[in-house]
Length: 329
Image (cartoon, rainbow, N blue to C red; front, side, top):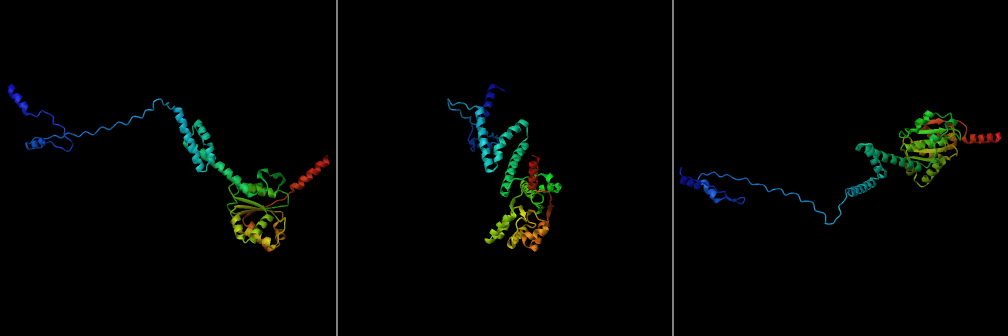
């Protein structure tokens, strides 16, 4: 091939790059080329590059840099405020007071999250139960705080301690069972009744204490006002009521009937602790009616633990000890 021929052939070939057209447009020359059988190759469309994220704004000129310690302190203050608000809304003041100290303890001892949560909730539950116990004891209107732990068992050998220990568990209260303490004056029946009432309050039961004469006065006022049924219903809300000193003051027929209604309204519905200086055989003397007394006793003792106690009066014994000391001098 001569040089002239090579140049001519090169001129016949399309060696120039096609111009780039907007999307959707087509070169008319390309359409004409298809008629001559020339194959057209399409070029891929390149995606637009993803813009880089904007750089953080620079602090104003002359502004002091925030120290990491200050930022952490601000975050901690916000957390403290949030926890204080949440514990106030949830009515959990104990958690609000103790969570920080317990958190320090958890970090020092390496507690897990679950262990820390259990410790916080346990503290709240304990304080709430303690507050509930104090409220139940306060609303029971005990004449004095006399616990079973303070009772002198050596002066009452007739008392079965195993039975008293069982009663101290208050398991009789949910069963609506009763306790009857019989014995002469001054041997500690009221002390035992109050002690059992405190145990019931500590075990979560509502308690109300009063003497037999005060209970009669309460029911008489309600009866005279046409509110006896409402009053009996109100009293039934208490899981345990204590009636002290039955038999010390005799009741007339109306009072005996009211007292019978009190006992009958709680039969298999709520527990009663009764103290009396008289054996059951003499209750007819107190209530002026043997029939009413028998019906009352029947309901009391059907589901009851009856403790017949005997011994010297605390007050008589103390008086005797004082006289003996005077003689020795």
